[in-house]
Image (tube, rainbow, N blue to C red):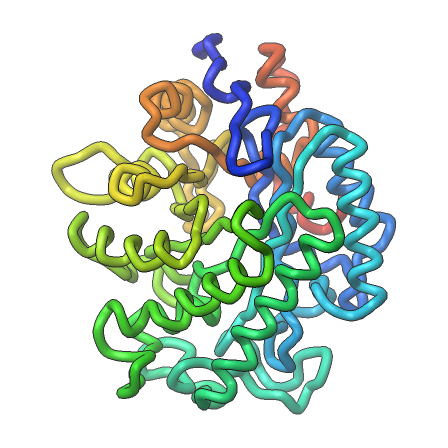
Length: 370
């Protein structure tokens, strides 16, 4: 195991924000906020990771103020007096522990099913009333619906800044609403929000523009995007570096400061002929800093259920390759998910070389908020 961990622990600056290191806690839905309100247990959960040295906390997905934004029980909202008061406690706790924190602003789109809280009568909203290609669910959004959702993201970002958050992440990945506009499989519109790649980008671009207008020029905006979807792990938004550049350019112009390129395994190359992963290509083509993510510290693939039983796979799930890629400035930040969910002190143990003390991720840890 490499002991030169310098790239992980260098400070990172963006606008007026300085992170103490380049390791982030990845956003992970936890379902522990009854009524959409994060309580003291949620405050303590995030505080523990900040106390253990994580530079940036990205919260679990938090729903914007639109009737169809939520798709799951007990996920936190990012609107309403009680929910925002709960988030204020989280912000203060993370700052007291020396960390920074972004909320992840979220709308699930056609993933929502009728019967889901807070209003069971509300259907899923999406660009074309599709959960996936050929799989209808809910209603196709009107242009008024589109304007309402853009406004909701702007409101949430404005509230985040007012509460003292250090920036915001816009969730544009994994087959949720924004990604449903981006993906041809779910966007069958024939107006200016559908068709070409540029048209499918329009909704996300307008959300970023609205957020930027609300928060001003110096408040960091991060956009999470992915090729894969929960509806189709093999889905692709773009198939070449040229297409990726077409995808990124309007988003940079709209105001994205950092791209969070979500992949299932950070070491896998994105396009044939290069070892660069999606974050690496994104940073190269956009000129913006990127965050990579994907199975850092894991030795089991919990999506497919297969084990990384070979020594080579174990080494890849460790940090040697991660450090090498960051030394090469392929990407500037790394998000750690399940390893930090299982073991709040994962980063401290890595820093101190206490690898034998790191707790291996177990599914049962999802049942508690530790």
